[in-house]
Amino acid sequence: MIELLTPAEMAQADRFTIESGVPGIELMENAGRAVADVVAQMCQRNAPPIAVVAGPGNNGGDGFVAARVLAGRGFRVGVLLLGERERLKGDAAEAARRWTGPTNPAAPEALAGAGIIVDALFGAGLDRPVEGRARDMIHAMNLAMNQGVPVVAVDLPSGINGASGAVMGAAVKAAATVTFFRRKPGHVLLPGRTHCGSVTVADIGIPSSVLQRIQPRLALNVPALWAGQFRIPAVDAHKYARGHAVVVSGGLASTGAARLGARGALRSGAGVVNIASPHDALAVNAAGSLSVMVRQADDAAALSALLADRRINAVLLGPGGGIGPGMREMVLTALSGERAVVLDADAITSFSDQPEVLFSAIKARPIGGTILTPHEGEFGRLFKAVSGPAGAPKYERVQAAAVESGAVVVLKGPDTVASTHDGRVSIAENAPPWLATAGSGDVLAGFATGLLAQGMPAFEAASAAVWLHGEAGGEAGPGLIAEDLPEALRAVYRRLFVDLGVWP
Image 1 (spheres, helix red, strand yellow):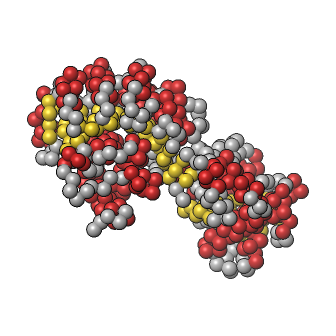
Image 2 (spheres, rainbow, N blue to C red):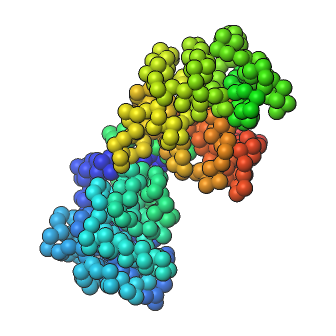
Image 3 (cartoon, one colour):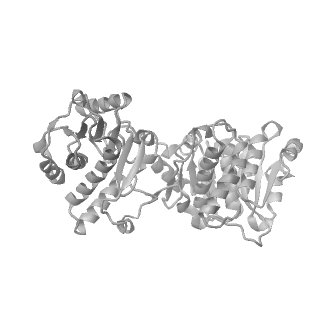
């Protein structure tokens, strides 16, 4: 269940299922029952009453079903309806007709005394700011939540855009969310993820075969997405069979970033890693790691001579490399061959005034051989044409950037998104907050370089690097510094290899 469905794709899943002969009211009954199951686990039968806040659409219909099921199990339940009952339509109207308990107008004061609240106002399809009484009810639910009354959201916390995760004026902060069939981007992207609490994905009778018709392009970044392309070292492999990577270093005062990247490439599995270093930094780079070899490369011509070694199959440029013409020439030199290339930090910023030069060089290469790893600032400088409009889902911006550049683009953050030119997207949710530290991104770029050196395709390598980076951050824990991340990868790999059935 790694697929993420946009609200439009979820509507297709519903429609295809109904067209196959499953009544819509049956799907609604199953959805409401799933919500009731979660709510029932959270409260005692002698607890204060359950308040179901129902909206005017199908989300409200799910709420009516949940209310009826809970009442049938002996819980005290009341429904607070936003709008007129007579104006409900279709399956929502039928669900309301089957509810014979108390229904009152939705008003903030009506939540007083509730022991638990079911937020069934709006689902994932909300695409406009909430206003008026709906906004008042959202604020009231949040106030109750702050006072210790748990809120269970139906599908998605009301006020969260299901496609982008954006807050549409105001949004419920839930303790738990029950969604259906598959998660939506708004469950994973920020700030939506922080509003959901624990998320349960319920089977409501939609067959997985509908995914073949929908062909979703978005997926949660977990090993199931890329494990089929992950390279397991062969027992008879030698170091060059595991890949030879080069990391380009900056001058004497800025070698740390390249050394972090090199260490990341080595720990992620590359058999050989070199640092291409200017003359003044040779001694510092050589002393920085016993396992990383250092070669002199003061300019693009020297880098070209180094890369003439056909065993070198992956290059990382940018971390601490400096901004300007020299870096641009080195990048274009690296891109002129068939080797995989990762561009980070200064390598990206150096082309902010002439992105078309970079994109042309990338598109002249084999498709999928280049990864760009910008953060939001670098992304905005390089991809000016796709950095808006305001409110556009993060993954749409990254998809557009991948098409424009011809590269796999990794937009870093607590909800890192990677996309390739064909529209495939991975969204990560495993990054702990302590990854926000200097040098963390350099290690991520190194992980991606090491995986490319071992022969992983670029999209899978980028996605795997992001996931491994998040897991390493969790393994290192609070107080981590960037140097900890490559070392933490050993434990992450051990667990991953056990899960993949190749260790011990």
